Image 1 (cartoon, one colour):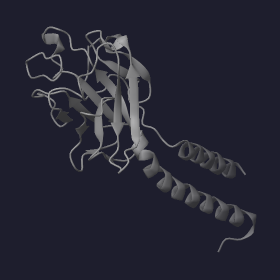
Image 2 (cartoon, rainbow, N blue to C red):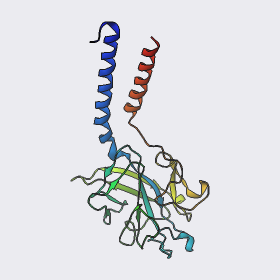
Image 3 (cartoon, rainbow, N blue to C red):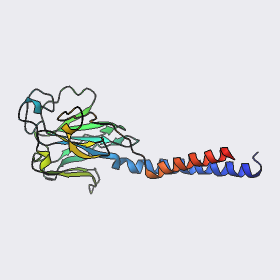
Amino acid sequence: MFDGPSAKASIIMIRYVQLVAFLVVLLVPLQSRGSIVINEIHADPAADLSGDANGDGVRSATHDEFIELLNTGLSSVDIGGWTLSDDDTSSVFSFPFATMIAPGEFVVLFGGGTPTGFGSIQVFTDDGSIGTGLSNSGDTVQLFDDSSTPVLIASYTYGSEGGDDQSLTRSPDGTGGFVKHSTIPPGNLFSPGTAASAIVPELTSFAVWSVLGLVTYVGGRRRL
């Protein structure tokens, strides 16, 4: 049996750990949907074969447009039934039933064509264009969930910077602001399904500070 002040401190520490574990289990699923971000947008494929972003050997102004999603969280997310498009809601793409995105995984939607060379990366194609076609001069990309009243999960509006024969991508992946892809070494024009830079998975702020608090507490007890 525990006895004395050290026993009381040990019981407090155990209860603290239990509370942190409970809240992390509670909060991480709530964070999961918000962990899906729009990570890369390609509205303006280059006019020559270098614009063949989907790898099918044919450059197309609409088929080679793409939107890349990334799961920045700590758990897998089912995006089956979620819709992705520009802000013209008359034409949206719905992800197939039970489409799962694992932590750190990318999913890519091309306007059309026959995407080639993507291996195990989850790649989808729209009906020939994303929405009514991503505008080179500016557009808004939107991701909605499958609720009866769809909830906006992620959105990004770009301007004329989207019309420069290359994609706009987050730097670093998942958490950074959007930049022209060629500004990231080694200067590629796009990178559908792969990282343009280092990915930093997110934690809920509470979980981070709770773990840090626990480490500090345990460290302090060991010095007593």
